[in-house]
Length: 495
Image (cartoon, rainbow, N blue to C red; front, side, top):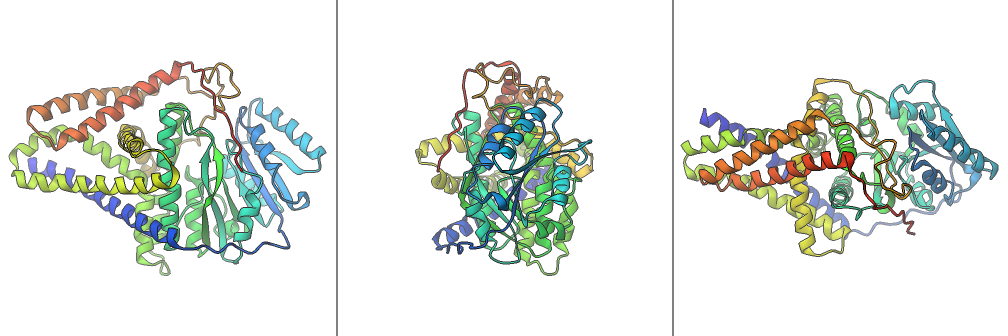
């Protein structure tokens, strides 16, 4: 029995090790890409018609800033169509109606498009808008984004080949230093938008449209089958279907589109649930197509596998934490040499992940190495602390359990003089998962005591990370339900 327990734990570590090797490959690809001089596309003399789609559902606090930003685009009005795809059921409807009337009076081709039923959620709204839009290209922005005026002039010229279907830009952040939580989110997302997106793009592996801050060629959307609502990450799903049809994606790391990071942990959990479950659904739906694609090279298939299984790492971390106590007891019956060899696999993975995030940190931050270590270890710990919550989402995704598309609450605390406690969309009810996170916190503390009793020094760091992560997530999930804050987000427009 001891052997089986250790074997299962080792297999989990083995997959994480393979995952870290993929991340190492992306780092190497990224470094190669950084050495290359990228030629600028030729300026367009005949600008195409572009449709800007703004899918909205109850965005009372942020929608005005988005509409204002889009109407400041440095693009001819007669070539610009703006669709506010409004599924709202609250005061957002009236705010949008007034904004649309204001800009229509100024000569903008802007329309508020509503539906009787919110069928298909965001994917349904995009599908409806795409069917009636006039643009050859479609730019999409979520409600919390504030794209710069030159966004279209920076992206549209990159559609210089007929097989280019998407141009995706990097997310920027209006509030990265709002709190420790937002700092860690920016830390993690920067690694995706620098290392992963560039690293995959460099070798022509599949990348993904990130749901916002990007531009689609309309014919690419239609050729790939259009927007579908059978996953929670309709963006990742359509990205894979399009690339399987041989459409090329372009990623622009140097073009940033500012957005708001969730400022409280329950909003972050809602976002994480959608992303992790949606990725599992996309794996279930699309990986067999990737695997059997005759024109897709093996290395791209391998990267696609780990890309789509990205969220499943949470499931492995959760399971490793769950069996950590039995592993401590089981290791007493094994040779110490074997234990050291097993532990070394995990240590190598940590070193590789450290390089992965440090490469991103050097690119995106001017802060000290000490700041990196604080962010890196805290990010890993809190990611572990989210493992139960995200594992439930992953399991539901693989099982095919359908749940509504739950938008991430936007706060724009600059609008609220007293903070976010009166925000209409704030999570106000404790999730049962939070109680389970508290139970697991106690379990990991007990396991740590046993690890010290048995002098299992290899397990101690892992348990400390779990305790810190689960403690942070559990206590903040409770505190953020009722906490009043005086902090404000200041939106800064940078050229």
